[in-house]
Amino acid sequence: MKKKGAEESRMLRELLETATDLSAYGVVSKTDLSRMKALCEEPPVYTPERVVAIRTKVARASQSVFASLLNVSVSTVQKWESPVAEKRPSGAAAKLLQLVELKGIDALLV
Image (tube, rainbow, N blue to C red; front, side, top):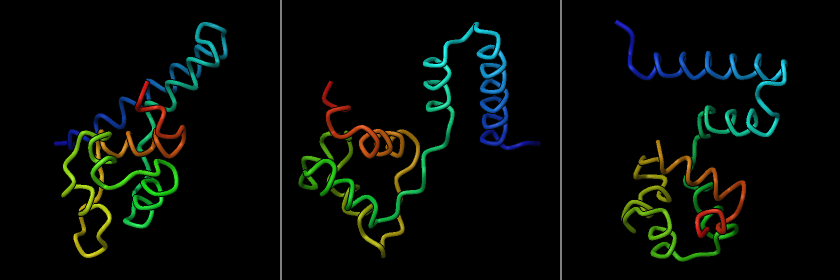
């Protein structure tokens, strides 16, 4: 029996392949295809150093303000930033971090 995550990844790959084919025929715009690619790709792995850099250099926020913007606890942000905690952002939190990293903190404030 296949894992649920593997099946979802396969479906996303196939969806993206179909959208790419439709874009070649002009049915899907390049803008829409770009958005679909962004939604389908897995977020990167966020190391403690990378989380700190996003919080301090991109968001320029304290841990408590950053936690509030991401709708997580301060404790969660502290664990993400701690090399010994071995807790890393995943799922929706990783996507939000990716969004902040790429577009800045204003992307969450709109």
